[in-house]
Each structure stands twice: as C-alpha cells, then as structure tokens.
Length: 124
Length: 277
Image (cartoon, rainbow over all chains, first blue to last red; front, top):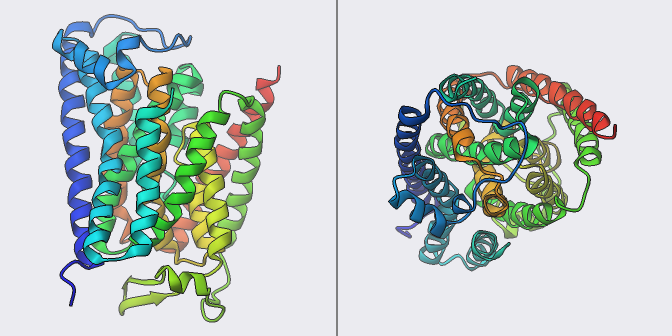
C-alpha cells in the first residue's frame, strides 16, 4: 500500500490552504490596523479609476514600500501572500503526484503550475 | 465617508457576500462587485480587483474545510483547472479588447439560464453511460452520505472541460470566480453530485482567480485600502457559510443558488444595457 494516497494528500492540502489564508489575513490585519490608526479620519475617493501607485503593483515595489513604513504596502503584501496560496497549493499537489507516481496527474498539475507562474511573473 | 466608516461598511457587505458565496459555491466575488459599484459607487475596475482577491480568500478558506470533510474531488479539480487557468489567461488578455457592456449582457443571460436549470433540479439517472475518459483520468469518487460513502461516476468529460474553459475565460475577463458556471459544468454536464460539484468548484475558484490576479495586480486594479475590508469580510463570511453546508438540504441549496444567480443576472444585464449609453 502506497503511503502517499489521495486522502493524505488532501489532508496536507487543507493544512496548506488554512496556513496560507491565515498568514495573509494576519498580515492584512496588521496593515489594516496601522492604516486605520494613521488615516481613519481621512477620505479616499474610489469613484474614479487612476490605477494604484506603481509601488503597489509588483512584489519588489511592495517590499520596498513596506520598509519605508507604508501601511498600505503591508496590506498589499498580505494580498500577494493570498494570491500565492493557491499557487503553493498546486506546487504541493505536483510533489504529491510525484510521490504517488501518478504520471497523468503529474503532467496535468505541471501544466496548471506553469500557467500560474507565467501569469504571476511574465505578463505585463 | 471617512476611511474608518467606509472600511466598516465594506467589511459588513463583504461578510454577507462571503457567506452566500460559500453556501452556493458561487464565490463571494460575483456579489461583491455589484454591491461595491451599485451601493457605494466604487469604480468597476477597483471593485473587480478587490473581488478577485476576495474570491481567492473565499475559495481557500472554505475549501480547506470541505477537503477535510471529503466532499471535494481533488482529481476532478486538478483536471478541470487545466481548462480554467488557460481560460483565465485568455480572459485577462481579452479584457482590454472587449467592451464589458457586451460581455455583461452575455454573462447575465448565461446566469439566467443557470438559475432556471438549477431551480428545476435534474432527473436522477446516475447509472449507465460511463465515460471511458473519466475512467482513464480516475475522476469517479465517493463522498460521505447518510448511509456510508456514496459512489458516483463522472460522464461527459470533454463537455465539462469545454464549459470550464468558458468559465475560466469569464473569470479572467470579469474578475470573478465564475463558480456558477463551474457548478453547471460539473453538476449538469458531468453529473457530479451537487454537493461534490459546489465544494470542488469552491476548491478550483482560488486557482482560477490566481491565474488572473497577477495580471490585475500589475494593471493596478488591486487597491490595498479597498481590498482589505473586502478580503477580511469575505473570509469571515465564507467560514460561517462553509459550516452551514453539511447540514443544509440540497433542495434548499438549489433555491438559494437559483435566487442569487437570478438577481445577479438581472443586474448584469441592466448594467450592460446602461453601459451603451
């Protein structure tokens, strides 16, 4: 009997999803606290679209802004962690199917992971 | 409205949307986007960005619970994610080229049809016509029923894949999870039991949304101060919604599903028609 079966895989996937969401929620919450503490009384206009500032649009920019004490960047960092959670889930499933020696699902999962990574790093 | 008031209001709306999204397998995004634009006058692009992020939270938060309870089918999910993620990429690219007014109307019509078929239910003819492709892909499975594990077969795999490609395209195009179409593809076409369809759909939504989220991030659609209460609210609501599922009756679920989809459909069509003026 293979130690790595679907049931075990699903248990770990569940744990991974919970951890990813919990971590990102904590980071977002920390950013939210800082943001509201400093800007609670201000007004922000979301009626007209002018694309968010450049530093919030990629990982490098967000990390740089976090270092300067920008609370919105902390929120954005949490959101990026959230986006990465399903990607990590698929990456883990890939490892799981390797251990299960399931070639069909290895290929299918690799395709999904390649698409996700492409969209996260390569598109403009 | 000050940032504090705005954040509180958006949080409350999002919590409600998240609860409905988890209950029906629709994902909270489809409810959040019209609520933000119609009730609070938020620009649709900011709403789409926030909703897309919330969709990932709903999916991942609720899916974790479903996976442990044994309702969702990880293989059906992974196989169909090849369709939804390719579709999501296509959708995100098409989004810059197609008028959303036209797409809104088409999507509204699709949803109206979904509400109609979902409220009618379907004949119970699970036996027979097994798909050899389903066999090769090991898609059939079982879920916990009242009298032990219930086995089910999967059929019309190619049709299901095609529908999922469409669902992924709409997801990338409109920044939603398009859980409604995912449920139709599995429940109506592939004859996957309703509870397995809704939970597997919830499971897939996060991956589909992640495929277009990177693109939305770089386009500057994801505004942190707006996405924050949406994400936290939807996540809280979805956790409550997910707890209700195991006890809920399939019939009641279908009616909630049909009602939510119907209201959304009308909203989409009205907005689309207005978009021309």
